[in-house]
Every structure is written in structure tokens, then in C-alpha cells.
Picture 1 (tube, helix red, strand yellow):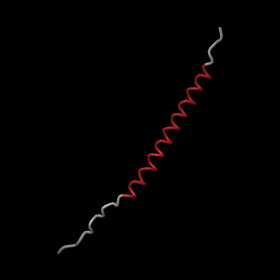
Picture 2 (cartoon, helix red, strand yellow):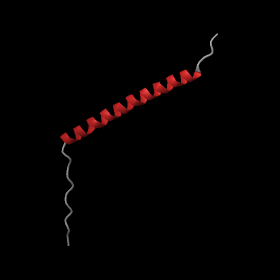
Picture 3 (cartoon, one colour):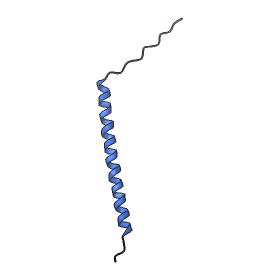
Picture 4 (cartoon, one colour):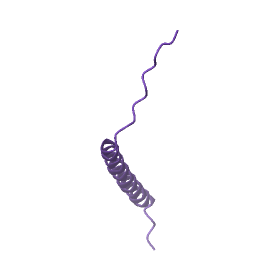
Length: 54
């Protein structure tokens, strides 16, 4: 019976983790890119200027 190649299995797990992390990073970038576009559509209320009273 053949001996299992643990290095191969470990490398396959590492590749799977890298792929998953890359997909997660891409989702975050897409989500982050979409969010500022929505903010530009809605005008932001401006704070009233402070007036000095005596």
C-alpha cells in the first residue's frame, strides 16, 4: 500500500485557502467600490458655521 503524501495534501489546503482569501478580498473591493458611488449620489448635509456672539 502506498504511503500518503502529506506535503501534497498540505499544499492543496494552502492553495484552497489562498483562493478563498483572494475571492474574499475581491468581494470586499467590489463592496467598497460600490459604497462610495452611493454616497456621491446623496448630498451630505453641511454643518452650520459657528457664529460668535458677544
